[in-house]
Image (tube, rainbow, N blue to C red; front, side):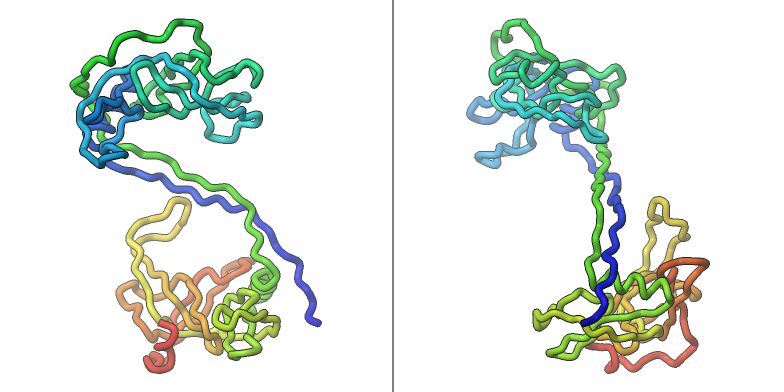
Length: 318
C-alpha cells in the first residue's frame, strides 16, 4: 500500500472589483441615497418596488416611474448576527432585517443596530441612520435603528430622478476567503514539485496518466494510486495572451498562459510561458520548467530549443 502523504491546507482569498455601468433607475436610486433620499419605482399596477428594479419582476415591463418613499419603515422579518464578519455593515452584533419602507410594497435588506435579539421583533418600527460620508452606494445607509415614530401617511411622491452630478458607475468588491485542502493526490503532487519532480497518477483501467492528479480517473471513474513521473519537458497545446495586469502580480503585460502537455502525461496543465516574446509563442512549442529560488513550483516554462512537436502528437490534448 503506498504511503499516504500529509494532506496540505492553505488559506486562499479570491478577490476582485466588479464594476458596472448604471441605467437611469439604478443611477437615480444610488444618487438619491447620497442625497439622503430613498427612491422606489412604481409598476403598471401601482406597486412600489424598493430598491427599484429596471423591469417589473412579474410582467417584465420596463419601469421608469420613480417615487420617493419614507426613510422609516416596518421590519417584516429578521435574523440575529452574533459575530459580524469583515466588510459587514456593523462591527458589533446586529440583526439582518427586511424593512418595508413607508410607501413601498417590497422590503429592503439591511442591518439593524439593536441591543440584542430580545429587542428585535417583526412589525417593529425602524428608521434609516445615514452614513456621515456618502458616495452614492447602498452603504450610504449606515444601518437602521429602532424608531418609536408612527408610520408615514399618504402615497409616495413622484420624483423626477434628477440630481446634480449623478452616479453612473458602481464598483463593488467581491471577496471569498476559505481554506483550500487539495486532498491526497494533489498534496503528493505539490510535495514532489518542491523537489523539482512532476508526478502524476495512472488509471489502472484506461492507463492514462493525469497531471495534476485528481485521485480518480475522470473517464473511468476509478481510483488512481500509481505514481508516474512525467516531463519535466512538454509541448504547448494552446495558449492565450494576457493584456490586463492582475493586482499583486509582478508580471508585465502582455504575457502568455498556456496549456502544456508534459511528456508522458495525458492531461495538459496550465502555466505561464516566459523566455520568449509573447508574439512568438505557438502551438507545438517545446518548453521546460523554470524554478526560481526556493520556489515550491515552477515559476514559468521556457522554450527548450527543440524543434516544434508535430500536431498529431498532441492534438488529443488541445
